[in-house]
Figure 1 (spheres, one colour):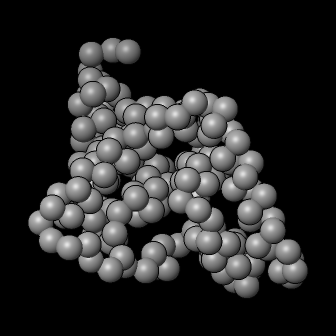
Figure 2: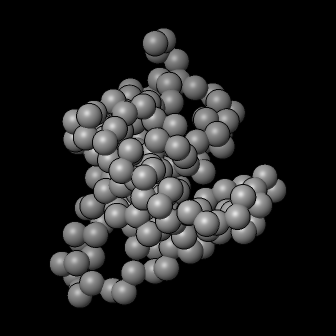
Length: 167
């Protein structure tokens, strides 16, 4: 690692490449799209500082920071007022519509949302976050074997839910 900071163009490139998967994860961790954007922004800055600011932060660090920031936000909101009714996460695009059949895409989105949260976050981190089980374990503060088994159970749940969906 050198002591020069990345150029603004390098940062923009890194953010452009990672923003979709980070925002998707942040959205799953928060109650609204606006909260997800705020948490994501705070997490990227915090992770960048923790990484020394000399290169883009490691993705597992950013995912873990998003998760912690989202938990902190929820706790603050809960202390301030009664829990609000959660915003429907249906506005989050799970797939690039140009590359997926709409019916299949919609069925998979529903299936992912039907998974228990502990399985959904592992599946999201593995598939859309492209993290290893070791990295997922770091993000969620669980053993790597637990991450792997949650992923397997999540995939089993998706298979069960998607039986009979036309391909």
